[in-house]
Length: 207
View: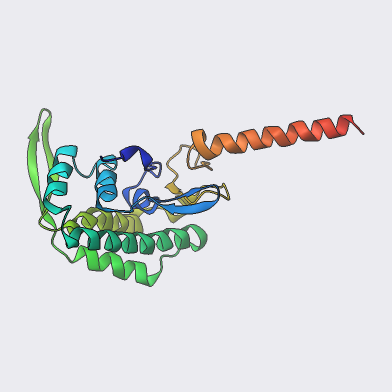
């Protein structure tokens, strides 16, 4: 039911992983958050909620209008964050409207933090208030706020493939990451470069 494999969690940042729920195929953008089930699947993939928590939330909300309305709300917030990522990647500046949208989310109570004992000591855990779906946007807003406050904007990049729309935060040692993933756009670029070199060699030999 919850198709987690369709999401690209390649960004090294929750805010950007949410931005990347808009993807591309054959040079055309397409939406991965078409319904409430899709959004819940993303929360599993991103590690925000367990599958058990998601199943409970789905049973409680799947037939309610609030769940359908929430999807539009989530996509609208995603689009604002995506515009912020695009602006930061190009100009190293965040638009004022994206800051306002994040602040509006941060104002809304959506749960509480508590200390939980683990095998090696204690750990802080955030407990969602799942009385309304919109609260699920809170950790994304928190991640976006942390990014704006603490991240190095120079390391936010778009995949260099012209047909790709994914963003990532470059945490590699040499800071030279170019592709959303080597198994995807990286390999395609390598194959294209190999084909060009082979073609150029063949043309040179025929001169």
